Length: 106
Image (cartoon, rainbow, N blue to C red; front, side, top):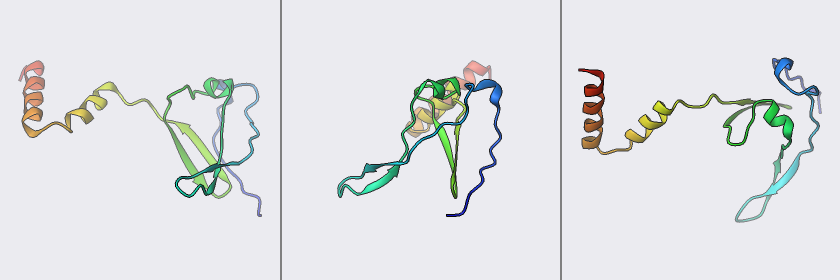
């Protein structure tokens, strides 16, 4: 297999002293046929030190021989609320719009 290069920007000022971690690709079983698929399991205090606290959503960019994992910015509470409102019936959405209009002084 040809050697692959991963050119990811690295900010060492906020990460643990050692920024290289060695992992081994294992496997997980899929249902219902229990086929083995490749899997990575990461754990350690270094994850939190690097900004990956429990519950953090991540994006994984996949390239040949290279994975880049970045933490997603938390979604503002207002956006979460708007997503919920989008699931309301048309009548309830109009009520929310009227309420927001009243709060905004329109």
